[in-house]
Image (cartoon, rainbow over all chains, first blue to last red):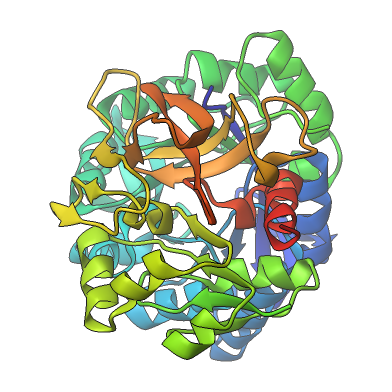
Amino acid sequence: MLTKRIIPCLDIKDGRTVKGTHFVNLRDAGDPVELGAIYARQGADELVFLDITATVEGRKTLIELVRKVAHTVNIPFTVGGGISTKADVSALLNAGADKISINSSAVRNPGLVDELAREFGSQCIVVAIDTRFVDGEHIVHTHGGRTPTEFRTIPWAKEVENRGAGEILLTSMDTDGTKAGFATELTARISGAANIPVIASGGAGTMDHFVDVFTTGKADAGLAASIFHFKEIEIPALKQYLVGRGVPMRTTA
Amino acid sequence: MKTVIIKYNAGNVQSVMYALDRLGAGYLLTDDEAEIRSADKVIFPGVGEASTAMAYLRERGLDRVIPSLKQPVLGTCVGMQLLCRYSEEGDTECMGVFDVDVRRFPALPGFKVPHMGWNNLTDLNGPLTAGLAPDPYVYFVHSYCADVCPETVGVCHYVRPFSAMLQKDNFYAAQFHAEISGDVGQRILENFLNI
């Protein structure tokens, strides 16, 4: 049976892992290659590396990091952050990334999704959607959730699917960093509207939040960062808990 | 031992190379017929679109070389599909090593396409899955699949049962990505190299 996926997310700045609450107050949580390998051993189903480095020098560091991760880790991983051209994607895939994720660049130029899917295949193109509830509507945001766009979230999710995205990474800026639970209702609506997998992100604080997002929220995967980095929840225990509540999980020996 | 990874324009073979690095196995990435024929083991990977990949193989005559190989050959993902008779993807005549067709997953509520993620293997048979615990999980990403047939040596269930693994004589094939399927995938690759 196809299982639901648990995905630790590693935010990367200048080659190091960081994670903040509401994307500020960054704290250092270690070496990304080492952390990735630990998660893979613990039974993480996939990894996501989000690069928040702005400088050109930093981008070169990222390619090196991707190469090291791919060498070390034997599960799929996605790289996102600041990707806006075919050349960026090509460099990351050649370094060993299995998928890449685009966000602001897709909002700026939706045709980029078509172009990348045609060139590299839908299976490796993830579109990340940062969403916030504003005046009674779910609105797509960019720049770490600071800038609202003209796109409503559910139609945008449908649009990126039609343009060839292989997966949607949905982050609720309303719940991100709160540890009060995923945006379950919105996740369910998007998962129901789109025929591609949806990764839910933002708000995980307890094991029951994962149960909710996989059952009520119909998510295909659940992503979290700090609760894993700071060992508030450990992946083997989380998977056992989910299995006990009837959520299909890959369990490793 | 000489292991060759067949080079063609079907996507990313980097993760296959890294997986062999982790096993400490040397390899050569090439599309040269003589190099391929002289290898002890041949890996035929593939990510991408079937008709484009087949066209590329035909241009280089590899569509005749590959089915005539006598050493163990492992086709993965689209590589496996191209070893079948025919693929619905791009209405493509394939190499016909395996006597089975490749069809798109039917659209069914509750089943997203592509089939993406970790799913388990059943009805295992053959040397590649020797030593694995029952019903092992491996990582899939695909929208097309081969039916279950007499050459099936591993079944996976999504919408309907399909061939996750095929074997005929010296030809082995896996629909999933062994190279990123954790310790299970690593064991499968190791088993192939040890045939």
